[in-house]
Length: 414
Image (tube, rainbow, N blue to C red; front, side, top):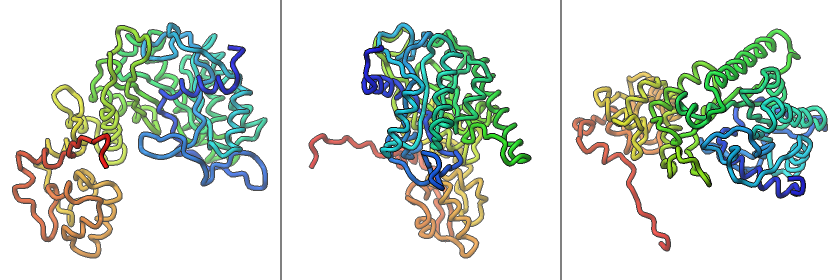
């Protein structure tokens, strides 16, 4: 390990970090370098180096402190028993890399995670030291996201939150039984206890800042988590139920879903192939229904098939609407916003436009078409001044009509 160059270590540890999806940078307070002081303004700048699951472009140095690990989680490429090339950075090396990349305009911040080396506390100390060097010695004011370790001392996690914009603790798997089976060194109650402590620290510091102007910030971009999809027997209903409880219990900014990816020399208890990536996409869609469209987790679960999984050929919102056709059609000129958000094909922006427009005129179908991306998906579920779907909503082949057409791409098509 000592003979590896910085570039070689960067190649190993940046590649090892690619399995963590929870590195979005939304929600943080913007900082600037006005007056020539500080390095790392996040105000209106950054180059895309990665895509978040919702499609935003972000530019973060996404890296592990080390891929050495004393834990032996079956699904992890960096587990103790894995035969992979190992490397380790010092806190100073990561800080130097971050500043160097930022000054070249490659990145706008740092996402730092790590395997567990020596002990959870030692590893957490190293991550906190990295953030301290950047903030206090290098005056770095860009975005920092630290993946904290639930087994570490709570005071270390607290120090991480004082230095980072966002902290995250991975719950790893949606069920306790799955975690016990695939990650025997981890404990679900300990993970949730650490998340609860972060939540209380965020609430306390927000309250303190209301009373004291110069009270320190604690993880101003909140906390997030990640669940692996398809590594165990948990179905989509299990995953959505877990996500809903996490949002309500810990006020998370985001729950990220990462499709299990087969790894070299995998354990026999793991599946032989990864789940379809579209399953991950459907879970993100269901997540948005719960966060922005007013659906309860139990309602989204009603969109699943008999095996508890969301259909892959249509999105969850359409699947729910097809199961509850008696709720439709809705009159776009009269229905409340909360119900219009349940119309397949109408997003939040489109519904806001409809509600604003109908204050001034009675909407026709063409008017609705001008306010949304595509009217074809919307037509069976709405009424307008000049439109009544009559028997269209009850057609037996409505699902086939609205499902995206499957197209076989040609490799050498002109």
